Image (cartoon, rainbow, N blue to C red; front, side, top):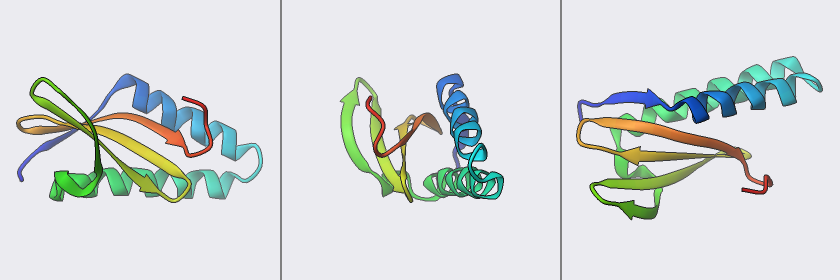
Length: 93
C-alpha cells in the first residue's frame, strides 16, 4: 500500500508526554521507547491490517497494535494511515 503516515496532534502530544514521563527516570529508555513506537507506526504503512480492529467509523477503520508496554491506535483511510493516540497499557483511558 502506498500510503502517507499522519500523526494527529493528540498522538504527537502523547509521544511528548511519554518521553517526558520516562526521561525523568531514564532518558535513554525514553528515547528508545519513542523510537520503537515511531518505527512500529511506519510498519503499519506496509500492512494496515496488522492491528486488531476496535470499531468502524463510516469509511475509517480504527485499529490498535501493541508496542512493548504501549498501544498505538490508528485509522485506516483511503490513502493514509492516521496515528490517533499512543497510550501506556496501564493508563486509564
